[in-house]
Every structure is written in C-alpha cells, then in structure tokens.
Length: 473
Image (cartoon, rainbow, N blue to C red; front, side, top):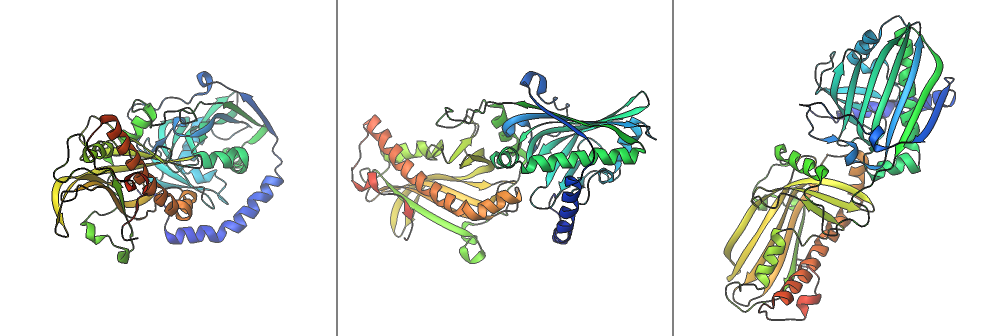
C-alpha cells in the first residue's frame, strides 16, 4: 500500500501548514498543564524494548539496533479523574480513530493498510506532519486495553511505542511508553543537537494525553509525569570496526539481507540500449587499465584472473564509501546484496540483486576480447533505480586488461524527503567518487595480487598510476 499521499493531499497539507504551525506554537508557549520531567541513566537490561510477538511481519521494520545514537526509554503518564468511560472503552475509541486524540492542526494519522474503523495486528499507519516528518508504523500487538506500534523504514526513530490504559480506584491511568533510537545520524542531530525533533515529540504526546482526558469526559489531575531513561549503545560501525566490511554473522545485517528476498526491482528492466540520456537516464561508463598479460587467452594466475576474483567478491569497492553484505556461499547470479553507503557519518542501506553474469569472448571493433563480469539492479526501497555493470576485459590480440564499469540511473521516490533532497544535492558527486575509487582500488589490488603471486605480466607504468576515466573523455 502506498505511504506517500497524493499530490492534492500534499498541496492541501502545505496550504494549512502555516496556520497549523502558528496555532501549535501558540499552544506550546502557553501550555498550562504541569509537566513533571526527569531524565536518568538507564541500562539495556532494564530499558530494552519488548520482543515482537511471533508471526509479526518484520519486513521494513526499524528496531533500535537499526538506529543511531543513545536508546531512549520514555514514559508519558496521565491520571484522569472522574472519567465517563473505562480503560477498555477509551482504548477502543482511540484505536478506532487515532485522529480523535491527535493534535490534528499539525499531525494526522493516515491508515494505509487495514480496515478503517478497526485496529488489527499488521495494520499500518503513517503519521502525517508538515514538512519531512512523516512517520510510518505497523501494529504489532493489540489487547482490550493497549496497542503497540513498531517503526518502519523512513521513520525518524527506530523502535516501538505502546499506548495503554488501566482503571485505578475510579481514575483512569493512561501511559504512552516508547523504546527508540534516532532512525539515522541525521535524525540524531535533529534530536540531540538541535533539539528540534525532541520538542516536537514532547508536544505531540502531551497534546495526545490532554485530548484523551477530554474524550474520556474526565480531567487531568496532578499534571503529566514524563520520564526519560537514556542508555548509551555501542555501535559496531564506530571507529575500530572491520576495515573490510561487516560480518555476515551480524544479526542486524542478516535480517536486512534476508528481507531483500521478497523485494522486487524498483524499475522495469529491459535491454541495455533502452536506458539512454535521451530518455531521462543518467549514463556513466568508466574504463581502468590493469596490468597487462601476454597476448592470447587469460594467463593462469594472471591479471585477468586476479581482477575476476576481486570483482566476484566485491573487493573493488572502498569500504569507507560502501560496504556489501551477502551470503558468500550462494551462487553469484541472483545474489541479493545489502549495500551500506557512508556519507559524513550517515549510513544508508540499499538492496540490489545480481544478474547477468557473463563469461564469454566477444568481437569489438573487429578485435577479440575475453569478458567476465556481472551487474546488479536496484530493489524496492533504493533511493535510485537502475543498473550497474562491472566487467573485466582482456584484449586477446594485445594482452591489455581493463576493468570496466557502466551505470544507468535516475532518482526514485523512496526514502525520507530530507534524504531524497540530500541525494539530489550530493548524490551525483558520490556516484563519481565511487566509480573513480573503484577503478583506483581495482588497479591497486590487482597489482598487489600479482606481486604476491609472482604472476607473468607485461608491466607498463601507466597501469599503476592512471585513474579510471569516463569512456570518451
């Protein structure tokens, strides 16, 4: 089900945004509800989120392990005196229509999966807010007096949140409890450094509890109790981690990788010559000379074979730019790969699928050339759509060996709006950086492999210093 609203819906939201923000800011400044806030140090043993129930769909789920920065365990508690409904009745009313208690002047719940007036496990909602703050969630637990969400890809947070009510000696107790980390480094900056997301979140749930009191027919007593327990979490991706990528045994990486199995391509594949600049695709083609061999078929242990090994294992990719996680024992053709791109401390995960493995002799411009390589194509959720080819060529008449990479791509509509904006601003530079780095690294690693194996080559100085250039430049 689509989580992105229609164009008319987005325009309507933008039209009412200024008035909504003004009204919300006024309420925030002149709030009269007493807030009893405290922040304390927590621990993983006491403040980790509950396990997801068996059978819950975990596709696209963002758990705290997928986030960045500290884990925050928060409780927003309200005591409501003389309510006109029970705990079960108030939860039923809220679950039937979350906008009944949401501050709709700046935030609305849009149900994108499930029956409109009923809440069931597996239902999905998107919390629509002005600007790029939409928050997709999935229902993972429902009881007569509670319901719980888990965040999905694109949410500013990674974790769970539970809403529950209880009857207590004639009063109604309502609690909102969450376990979450920032969804990524950018969200962490917005929450911890700029405090923007933190205050928006506080206002959101305080307003939610105030409206619950009104809907219940009672009144808040004693103000709202707000406790935040902060837990520092070690990140295996910090300095000191593996320089060559992440272990497949990493539970988080394995889960993301396994979820790629059911994803489809995010564009309609076709013949390579269909994807041209005239049709709106960005097309790149790079060629990097490698150490040469004697003319004729590839030499055992030579430059062609060394480069082929590096290409098969994705070793040519600089791990400081992008790392690949995959099942190394599976076949190359059809392999799912989880690519983790790094950009100024931020991390972005992309799914791709390998295809088109080639091992053949071609004739190019009347010259015989041996070619080995493969391509991958982008899957659903990728910020781009398109294909990237990687091949090793040996010209049989001269012995020249080359690493060639070509790509056609365009922006997709997946991901957070802020991230999509970042891709438009910086994505092209990162594409060029990756291609040039891959060419340099392939030349360097191939030369190192030959030096170690003492394989026969025809040395040329240019093989060691020339940087891969766009073909035709």
